[in-house]
Amino acid sequence: MAWYREWFGNDYLELYAHRDAAEAERHIDFVTRHLTVPGSPITAGAPDPDGGHGRPRRVLDLACGAGRHTAELRRRGYPAVGIDLSLILLDHPPRVPSAEGDMRHLPFAAETFDWVLNFFTSFGYFERERENFQVLEEIARVLTDGGRFLIDFLNRDRALANLRARETQTIAGREVAIERWYDESSRRINKRMRLQDQAGGTRTYLESVRAYSEDEVTIGLRWAGLETDAVYGDFAGEPYQRDTSERLIIVGHKS
Image (tube, rainbow, N blue to C red):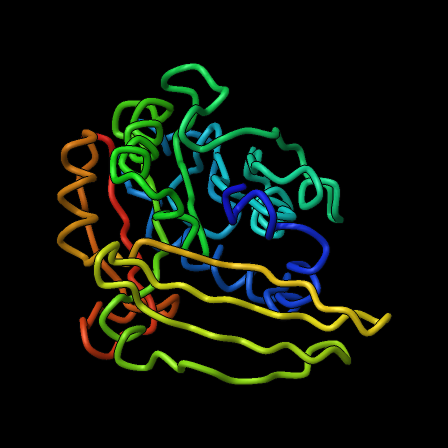
């Protein structure tokens, strides 16, 4: 079974509990600053609740998980829905309007959304390059003309330079042994986690993401019909620096 079908369940929610609503609030602050375009036909409607120049008519939180970003968007008055493959995550509070689905085959009509947002390195999951770039084609398909997108990805160069091969953490009172490695042949960063359960047993999970460079992602976006407008290195809005930036955050539009 593919790693992403096994991992995104209750253990995932426990290990990543620090990815919380407060972090989502900071991320949506960034979105409202950098995706709203003055004079755009998409954002020419009602005043933006964060003081911008209007708001999108429909927003998709792609690979939404438990929906913390969707919830924050809706709290601010944005008509947002989420989609994720994991029914366990979708059923977890805050239980936002959402659909179960595969990001390679989105269950939405063409030109449905004015914004598509993809947070927390939810791109590069699939083993075949064609499948990963099919996700970008699906983003382009469901975006309206001139629609805006955000992709929040790991910064490959910094991640590889700081890759910690082994460590043990205690999370929520449970010992977690973590092993990380980079596979040069597949160009994937892998992370294996062994979790102790309360009965003394062990459960093992894998994360595996294709480590794309900035150029690889932007070229793939262009092939899909999406243009890059800006690249940031964190959610404070700092410019992307290949060697030092924490993240690779790409903002653009459907051309």
